[in-house]
Length: 454
Image 1 (cartoon, helix red, strand yellow):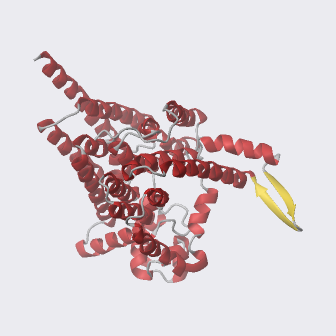
Image 2 (cartoon, rainbow, N blue to C red):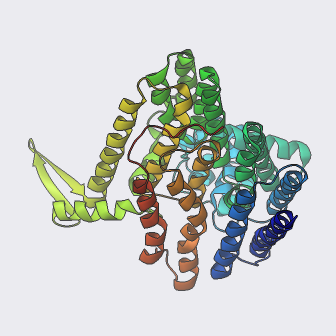
Image 3 (cartoon, one colour):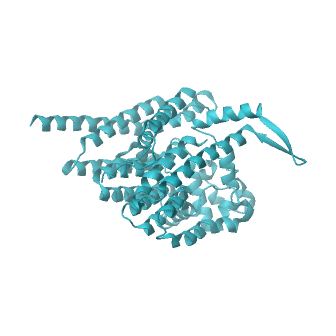
């Protein structure tokens, strides 16, 4: 009896911390301006979230939490994006895909709209808020089709395209919850109640949830020994954010079943790029060579590259032609080489393993990719949540730490408002990255997946 009362008391405390923390963040007039309060609310919500999972709700209490989670997601749907302008590019590209075709966003950046005869109605408040409008799209075809679908539904309903698009993304969110719930209720609860999904999907409206849906389908397909479903999931993820392509060689290393899907799926993803010709990857190239945000290991590699070059750049005479190498170019090549070395080790270890081990290996690879990347936005961590929810894997603890620290990655937006320019605080970056690497290394150094727990 005392145990039951204690459990009920802890549940009430956890529920209060979780709901109050999220509600406090929702009620801030501007989370960027009130950033310390936002971080405090997120910390309270995260503490409640972890406590809820530790209490392992079931039966009626589980249904209550499902209702609370859905209610908070719908509440967030009504709120304006606070930290990111990405969704405004989604809105414009959704309309432009219907007007100019699927290849148009790859060929023409939004800033060129006035000179291209784009309808004036498309150059609305969303168009004005597009970040880096001088760059063409970086989003793969499936994401663009979702944006276009939101424009179609908006035309049919006469509502707000922002609300319609966020509602579509919320439907993907709830589908992931349903799929994970069928595997295990706590797996579904980890996704559904995670503060990161509520803020970055329902409020900010990031399309990364579509990629997470593909990763979830692929992982569940492998767990159930259905490689065809696995490949479909990986390519669904790749059609939204390209990250699903990491999983395809892993699957091929273990089994050839279902591999007939690779060619047609790749063709569907690549076709719009080929049609757009030389402009197709201009936006993606700018992103991979110029973007830097939330990085950790890259700071150290960049310092090493600077020392190797003896400064910001070095001009070399290669076979009679002068080539200038910058420290950022060299650092990105070094980072790519590091990741490929890890990826190669994982591929070697995958030989002879069960298909059920792919989620463990894939989750590890995504964690390493994000830790090494020059760009780590909070919404990228959505990719890791299905793997954490599904299985225990080498690097899982690092993924959980990053998920909980995700709100700290928004701090440059606060610094920009406070000081007038975008900058990162080294201490905050260290708080995010150093424990993540320690947790990654702390696990037994083996790429053999941990025992299956479900």
